[in-house]
Image (cartoon, rainbow, N blue to C red; front, side, top):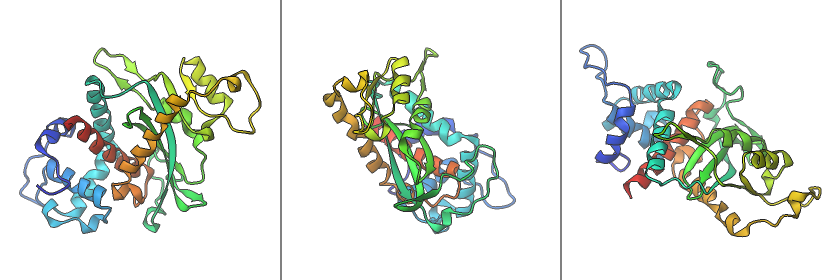
Length: 281
């Protein structure tokens, strides 16, 4: 088994979530089994190499890319991400004491620019823009208090994190076996860049504690007079550690995907590897 290939126990979790295998056809290129395709996708994710450089042992690169693109469009990768989160939550491995928020800029290659908007679910800018760090994407991430990724969204590199706090929190949700949707933590941890009265008011309405430092130029208010829970705020570094783990996948550390949807799928594949590692411990 190659370095990035699925072990048997991990494949047993993933395989039921993929489309049915197609029968062998005598005409055309030989059909590749899903496990071989997923191993090839993971090789690209971890190595960061172009699709054309995929080793021959995985099959023709175009077949692997086309199936990745098709699964990304159909939401299959997102389905795997949500299902593994559900399994982790069922095993009490998701900590709902707090959710940590943060953003990180990613440089984009020239190959990532120039894609046309062909699908209604695509961002008009494909999540690309210019910031002080150059041309790239900003990843917005929410994790639980142990550093497990719960939700993502993308924006241009110039966007401010605070604009995406509500979007991130709105995408957090795990359907439990009882049919109940679990989405509310006890607290939200974020740095002072997220500090705004609108976000604090929204969290208060939902009964969520805001552990967010105030900016020096914010007006005094009843909220500002409350002392920051420094003990809980120290846990905010879990989101930084999660970013570090995700960026070990070179296809995430530097963006090559033209569309925001496919780059988001790469992010979720990186998260899936973290989920499988947690389940195997």
